[in-house]
Amino acid sequence: MKSCVLALALLVGHPIFASAKSADLSFELSGVQVGRIVNVIYSDALKTPYVLAPELLADQRLVSFRFAGSVQSIKADLIKLLDSLGYAVTDRGGLEFLGPKRDPEPALEAFVYKPRFRDVGYLADLLRPLFKGQFTVNRTVVAPLTSKTDVPMPPGSAAALVDRAADVLVFSGEAGEVKKLERLLAQVDCQVGEVMVRGVVYEVQTGDSTGSAFNLAASLLAGRLSVNLQSTAQQNSVRVSVGNADAVFSALSSDSRFKVVTQPALRVRSGAQASFAVGQDVPVLGAVTYVSNGQPVQSVEYRNSGVIFNVTPQVREGAIDLAVQQQISNFVPTTTGVNNSPTLIKRELKTDVQVRDGEIVMLGGLTEEKSSAGRSGLSFLPGWAQTRTGERGRTELLLVLQLTRAGLF
Image 1 (tube, rainbow, N blue to C red):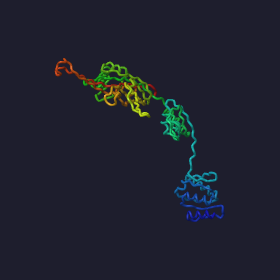
Image 2 (tube, rainbow, N blue to C red):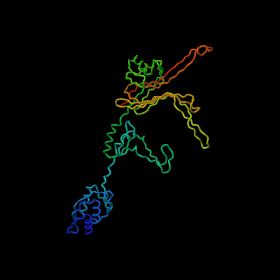
Image 3 (cartoon, rainbow, N blue to C red):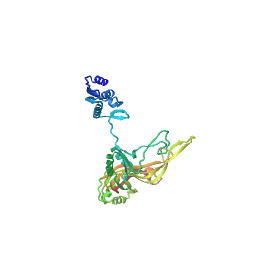
Image 4 (cartoon, rainbow, N blue to C red):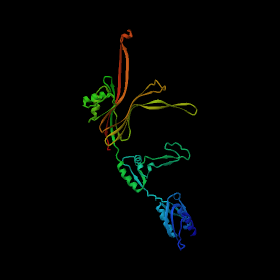
């Protein structure tokens, strides 16, 4: 009792009054750090083993209070004071631990969902930033022996593998998050739109008098279908809104200057890539490697040539975004570069356009010029007496596409 009074007196520097009953205490403290108060009361009054958390010891807040009563009542009042400051007293097998209050671990629920239209990876990537819980599709799976490519891993290492081809989505989180996830899944797991892509690739013979392939197409369509394209020589894309796409294709194909190279027709899902290729695989020389005895080994690679057509649509509410890549190529004997390896000559078109449902888009601008010269006349005549002949031609690729929604959005 006397040690408690003395310690408190030295701590606060003003009188502390004790009652006549030795079991009761009465004192008043003003402007003292909370950690020092707890230390003195536990050491000299409660006589109980205790541990102070670093957060409590570092707390610089000053506290003023007045306690009176038995040892048990002082401890109860101290617990209330600590609770108001954000601390709790926890009994751990006879040792009382004083530290910050910890929120109880929330109860987790498991939610299993079978996607109707979208794949599991898409749904998890889209919704994961909105939740604190965990989607199992993003869970790290440890494979200590080999990776997915069956390449041996160093001893003690692990590869993080994720199975994104599952047919169910499993989520672990609080009850409120599970309800939120159910509401969102009903909105985002919707049917993916599909697009029917019809196209014709024309190789158009043009010249200085006729202008570009767009000028020729504008003249033909204006004369036969009364469609005004308002084309200029600088344009490389035109959109046309007509009811019948077959009429446009027929009008262009009827002119001898429009040679049909290919007519792809593809049905593709929104966000996916569709490819159409007609041609051949040509062997070309690749890298040279050396085996253990120093013998060089020449590798051979096969590369595509011909007509290569790639489209990637994105179906929106009011329009369709389309990424187009179209290539016409062929291999010829090489005159430069690596001997015995052919040279690839290609004309390629790559662009992004936006069209409405049923609209026709024309893309072009890839041209190739060819010229030839010669002489005609009697061979024994001098050159100045012979007739000089020459021909200059230009071909341009014109891609005509029509996009039509083929599925629900």
